[in-house]
Length: 217
Image (cartoon, rainbow, N blue to C red):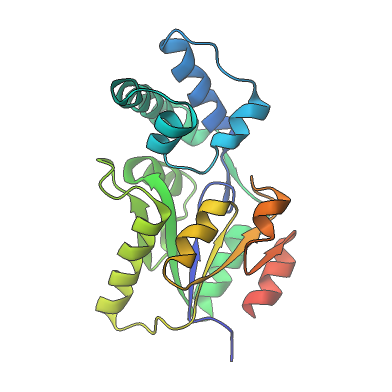
């Protein structure tokens, strides 16, 4: 018996190396707002959290500034950043093999719907997922926990067994979101997380082959 009936997949840092496009979009946003962009080592901190949290909490922007920053960021990302990326080697085939093994798959990203769809359509990823879980463009659904709640509801409506689920991600936000629902979470070390984040996950893996063995496919 395989260990899980459902595998949830984060997008940025797990499936896609999207950092180059995200960096460009952040740098453009800072410039348009008349600010000096942090260096890319600092910008790595912003890979993963929802934009509202990044601008409003991490950067301390006012509510009005946060709204404006998100508008600028999304416009640039939708035009340029989304396509300045590439899948990590081997991960797309692994997801396809998981689905071929009749394990339910779901996208579980806190990236907003339009941005996520631009990426998954451009890189031909849409057919990999039984359920498409994202944040909403209006930020009503924005955190990883919000996205997971949406996916769990969808699974329930389909009558899917929800007792053996794992989230594959790369940051502490994935771990924390999964913990709210008692879901296992494994982190991939090729993404944007740090060792202290990996230590809080159910497990972590440095290669796709290791993750494949863990998932039993």
